[in-house]
Length: 201
Image (cartoon, rainbow, N blue to C red; front, side, top):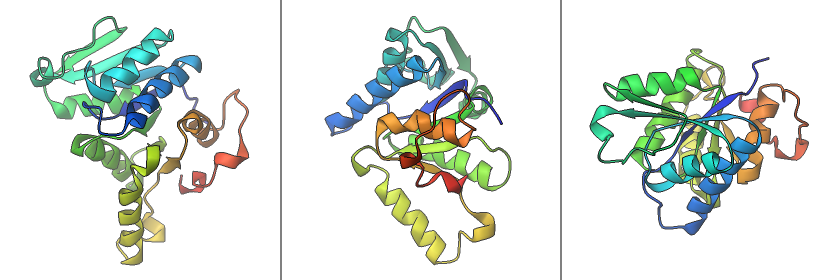
């Protein structure tokens, strides 16, 4: 079993309209640091992106930021993190994020967050990796995507032999335990009440 040592978090470069999103990002950063995990994220200091990284760093965690050159000014790179990598383009950024993470977490965000999470789900569907992808469904944010995936199944575009692997956490405190369960828990105890969707992986 793979060991959970680092997680990549995809999330918005803005805060959204629900205060619960920022609270979830803050809590997730604390949880990642508390478990001794390295956070891999998009490198910016703005929005939920900056919140999760700043929270992890304040809680004593290690943080790797990966940002493409053309976003250095727009997303105001976060200072004081352990590792900051500036890439040539988005493709290199996403590849490095994939390589440096053992699992992926999608907080609320926009089209970029959606694209990154779905790409990891697609790669897993095609057998290119078995790293878990968790949708942190804060206040039902990902419900429309989950409904769309169910619609794709009902219409025959996602078949049992080509299932899209993903996990869903309704509470932010369940995210890390869900990943630990999926990867064999490591040394952590596993709670059975959060495993509704673990069989998708």
